[in-house]
Length: 194
Image 1 (cartoon, rainbow, N blue to C red):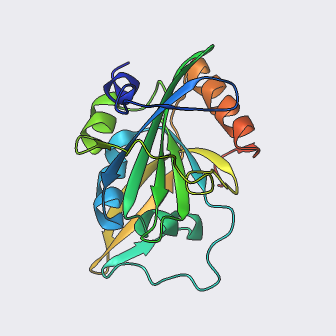
Image 2: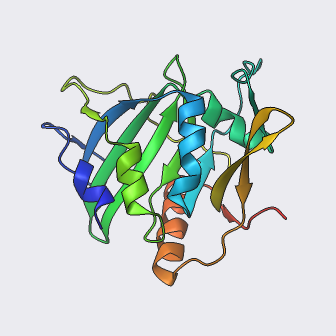
């Protein structure tokens, strides 16, 4: 498991979650289109889109479309905040996608079935967050749902389309981690929508 280890000690002053586990965080500047083009390399992930979209959704970046509205937040991303922790049940790592205003857009959870090399490559430009306390609402996961999926992109009429595809297979350990992450976010783990 290389993904969590690469970032587990990124911050010299980790925050503590409510269970007392250390959480290290780092930041990766990344545009939505850059993120979307790299997501298919990850393979299986747990995806948690934001609970409620902004009243007036900003337009998608030029040249991009989404197959489902829940994927639009990924294209509004301006920063990835990577969090790693080692709890009683082992290591966990996730990425919070934040927009230009620092609002939560989506969360991606690393699973044992995720391509760890692609995950590490995605986060290669990470830098430790400042030692100053993080605003409590800035990194909160206000998710609408939790889905196990793979991302795909394709060209459609001269535009790039971001879509989600069903998983071919997920390990029992991956399913357990996904269920626990969904429970921690107070959402149900949903089957892939048809």
